[in-house]
Length: 158
Ligand SMILES: [Zn+2]
Image 1 (tube, rainbow, N blue to C red):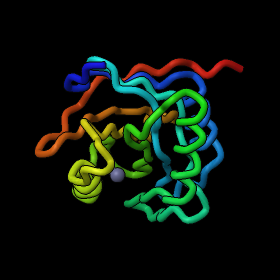
Image 2 (cartoon, protein in one colour):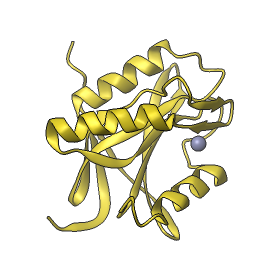
Image 3 (spheres, rainbow, N blue to C red):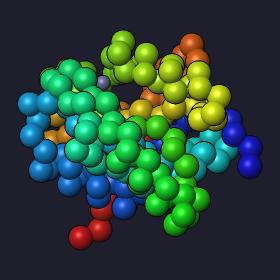
Image 4 (cartoon, helix red, strand yellow):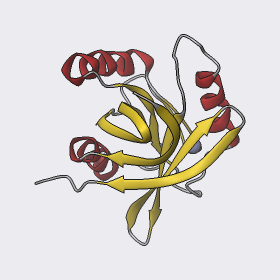
């Protein structure tokens, strides 16, 4: 499997459903989010599983950090079911633009710098409210660069 710089992030219906449900039911005075698991093939990252924040997530109005134990459990489950690996994360910016903050960028740099994690690119999908609905923007982060990429969203069925 060859990995090229990411140009497209595809959220499959099961992953989109988890995010849509969290966006609908969460308290948006603070950020929410979770990890993304899937496959990076050629220039596309396909997200098969999306996580919820988990009980120990750090949630403030301007920052989100996943619950590590919760994320690890989901990652183990996803790997066992279809070989999905950790490709990045999603979170909300309830009151600002859908671009990674300086603190987000620092988190992604830390992940990219850890050789044990083996990241090629860290994918970030950030959701902001726009005219009564949530809109997502996808970013591919590599050491020294964060670039916007196309986000393809499969409609959750039912
Ligand atoms: Zn952020």
